[in-house]
Amino acid sequence: MREHRIAGLLLASVGIVTAIAWSQQAMALEPGAAAQTTPGINIGTTAKPMDPGIYFSDTALTYQSKQVGPGADAVNGDNANLARGFDSAKVTVVPGWTFLGATYSAAIVQKALMKQIGPPVNTSASGLGNTLLSPIQLAWNVGNGFFIQAIAGVYVPDGTTAGATGTGNVGDPYWTFQPQLILSYLNDGWAFTANIYDEINTKNRISGYTTGQIFHTDFTATKTIGRWTIGPVAYLVDQITSDSSSAAYEFNNQGKFTTFAIGGLVGYDFGPAKINVWATDEIYAHGYGGTPGAGRNETTQGFTVFGQVSFKAWPLADEAPPPARPLITK
Image (cartoon, rainbow, N blue to C red; front, side):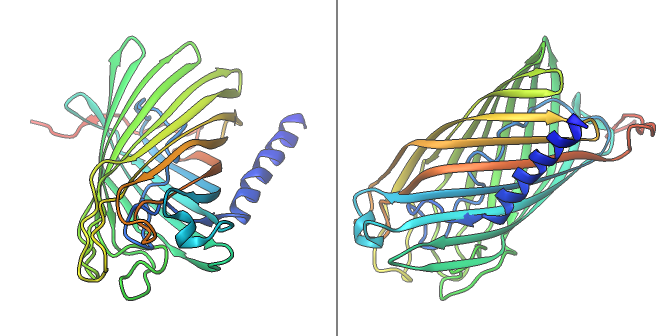
């Protein structure tokens, strides 16, 4: 009964996160656009290879913030609240293949988003974000508790778009390539992970604008005791190249942004499913360069609450997993 009550409380937390989800991202990008991957979303993952099977996870979040930077007041006024959130569903397939000594897997992620800017602007939008495809995921167990995973991902421009430049809703009319490297050390219940990834954007097919590269690192340091997992987390996100403007805009953007957040994670393993809840507070946010008042040197600063449910959909615990086999055979 006690475990059922705990499960109910954690599931309710995830539901609350979903219900109050809203959205807005850093403004050192094309106006109306956002970083494709939400900072901190990969907290709690590790590079450890999975057993063969099909896995499902669902992550919801709420982000509450204000704009900061030299041009923030000129754009939205002193009291503009920015908020965002979404529910993101992920399916990972591990067929049991090995390649170059690594366990092969593939994944697809689809998110539904809402975003809102409060008074005096009062704008909002909702819809489907761009789909993330990760057809190549290779995870190595290198020994002594160390694991490495390399991922090749790409966001497909199939999300909900609107407006003259295609960035008036939550989808974006351009491709984003996301190379990713996960480094983990796991031993005696301890899990230390750095999840490193870069967003490389193509030109907006409607406006001709190109958003600069956005570099992410999500950090996790947790301890598992029995069924409970707890520990500090953090993330760093940094726009490392300038945007390239186009004739659709009256300014030449050189704006960038940097954000650093810290927080904590708590999780519980029910056996059939795992639930993680983590919260982060952006203690540093800085927008620089660009044209003040044109949305080019502002960024957001706030806090985020994440809730995630994950489980193995097939095979179940009482079913034998398929045997591992080489991806390439002679």
